[in-house]
Image (cartoon, rainbow, N blue to C red; front, side, top):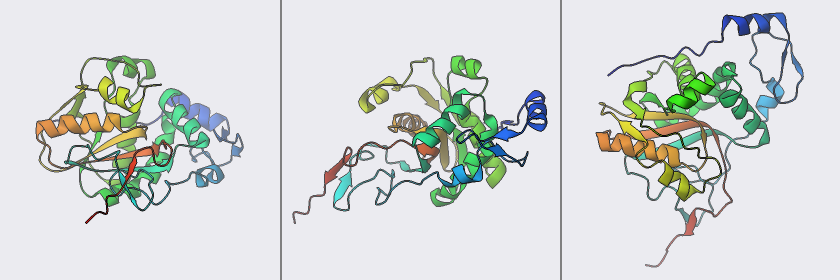
Length: 250
């Protein structure tokens, strides 16, 4: 099994441009005086909100105290937990879009710093980035999940195991699909490799959980016994969309 560390550093041309020109915050467009500062100013980064409470202890889906969570009820039992650092509001959505589609890989260390505390809560495990298709990697120039995993590894000293999970053929977009359509679209999308010990999946955004569930299912099939996941942001469905009232009948 190959263990890899992805170089998420910017190109020499981008580094020169950063040195030559003052940085501007991607969110508020204010000038960032410190050239070593990431592309989000401290004020805007401080406005990134965590997920609301109370929430499901396993998947972080918001729920009322007397309701059971249905979102993770059918997850593979080996998929023990998923954690996200911030809520996907409009500010965070803009940042996530720039990171994923705009080539702003320099955002990864800042995003990783918000994700790192959740790794401690998930326990030990190699970092396994969600793989993307060859077409998307070629179009974007990188896989955003690998960039995040590398930044997390740099920050925490954990190991990145990219070869544990591979993507089969197929490049159908998930945008605009319902949760059920997303899960069906990803059926058999990944191939897992058995490893000794736990793994932690890494991705940029948790939307419905379909991608993570599909990846966890592939790893479970390969024999991995403990799987968790961490993402930078989490989209929120309406409260109650994936909950059911707890049966208190004796």
